[in-house]
Length: 107
Length: 114
Image (cartoon, rainbow over all chains, first blue to last red; front, top):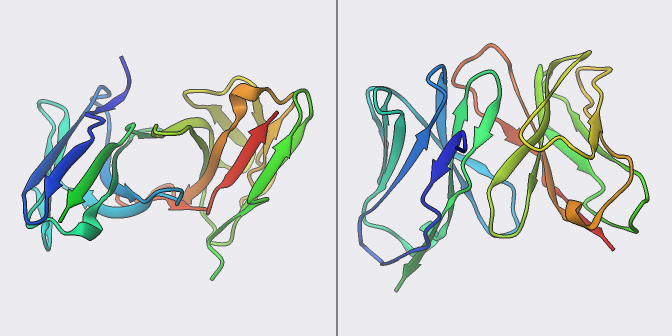
C-alpha cells in the first residue's frame, strides 16, 4: 500500500462548478499536511496547509480527518486558471507526495 | 533571494555514464530532499537529509547516491545511468523544526538517458 494515495482523476468540470479531492495516508504518526499545485512542466507550489480544524483560503477549503487518516480539498466556483494537478503532501519523519489529481476546468 | 537552485536544467546522458545533479539552498534549511517525477505521475522521494552528515533513503533510492557535507548543498549522483532513470528531478528544502513550514522547490532538472 502506498503511504499517500490520491484519486488520479482526471476531473473535467465546467467553470463555476465545485470540485472536491480526497487523499488518504497510512502513517498515523504524520504531523503536517499540505496541498500543492503543479502546472505542466513546472515545480510544485504550495497551495495551502491543512489544519485539524479545517481552513479556508478564498475559494479553497482544506480539511483533515485524523481518525480516518484523510485530507480533502474543496474548490468552489472553479476558474479556468484552476486547471492543474493537485498534490497532497504528508509530513512525518520524511515528506511524501501523493501521485496527484489532475483537474481540468472547461469553459 | 535565490532559494533552491538546481543545475543543470537539462541533461542528456548515455546508458552507463555517471552524473551529479547539483542542488543548493541559501535559506539555512536543515531538511533537503530529492524527488523524481515521471510523466503523468506524482513525485517520488529518492533520498532526504535532515542535516549535514545525515542522509536517508526515500521510496526509490536504488541507483542513486547522495551526500550532505554542508547545510547548503545536497548533490544527487547517478553512478551508472539507466534509461529507467529518465525523469524530471526536483530538489526541495525546508526548515526542520517548524511544523507547518512547506518545502521550497527548485525549478527541476530534466534528465534523459539514451
